[in-house]
Image 1 (cartoon, helix red, strand yellow):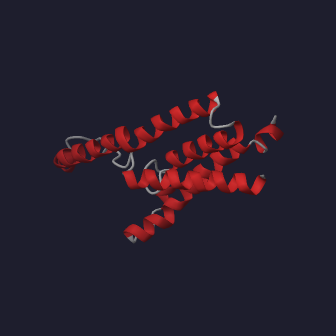
Image 2: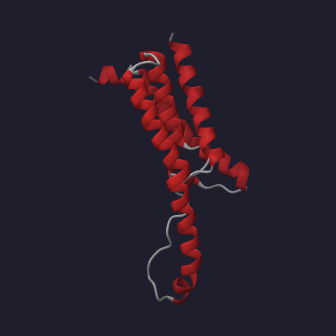
Length: 149
């Protein structure tokens, strides 16, 4: 069973896409904002979208391996669309709402009337971050495919 997982191209593509996507956030954050932020590696937002990278790599690897006309590819593509839409749409809007609520509530926080923490604002991705994640997923999937076939 473990041997099957270790040699499963889809699992390898998923893991590499997620891991590389998460670790690229650290140097890219520095290049863009001129600050070191180790916490971004564990964040759900930022450049690139590792969610988009993961589902793109999985979907393309399934398509290359099983065929683009297969039912499993269609299922993976549908899931990828939902995840990518969520990353750029729903979670992005939730992050914007959190930012605005934090601005409104900052006076209450300063006065000590509300002991609660601020809401997490970096939840979703910009379209550029999602596109970068998709591109990373394609590169990882194709590289893995070309080096193993």
